[in-house]
Image (cartoon, rainbow, N blue to C red):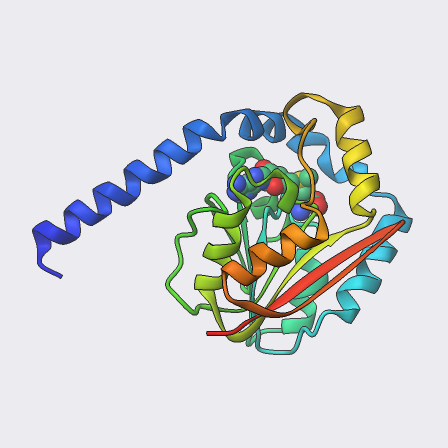
Length: 222
Ligand SMILES: C[S@@+](CC[C@H](N)C(=O)[O-])C[C@H]1O[C@@H](n2cnc3c(N)ncnc32)[C@H](O)[C@@H]1O
């Protein structure tokens, strides 16, 4: 691409990023304020359940994994041990406080943290072998765009997982109780989520929505 055109494209991307950040301010501030105490929220039981779920994801040595809405990096240690030195874990979060804490918590060679929006990912097409959004997807203000972007940056046949330690119903109740920026954040109903995955060309969609656990996934069909 000629230099002038490339510069215009970069400006356009920067503007889009700034614009999307402005429109997401409510969530960014909300999570910025929670970052300092975030790690205290997890009980030993939560961590055991999470480790159990992560064991079921098809994580293999050498994989490059994207953790969307990584927060302070609660998944990093579980994932980085599985992918080992030849693989990597990249966390993305648009709360700078969360991203910085994640960076401080996990200063390992195979862990990267990027301050970015899940709806506008700063990665080339077909970069990752797997993407996981743990306790994050309902907060993405444009969920379809986040799925489209995840599809773009995943390699062919790579899987995208949406994980929660509660059912979709339990999660909506919890968000309603917390209120504020997350009051209306929810996992779309099954039929709607299937449509969204389908729109982005994910196939083999599996949705498991039970009290105490939510796991949805799709395979990139490109
Ligand atoms: C409930 S927290 C979960 C954090 C982490 N996955 C965990 O379970 O500890 C949701 C995270 O998603 C991030 N987030 C929300 N919307 C986002 C977006 N559009 N792009 C990137 N991160 C986002 C928030 O900043 C927050 O850190």
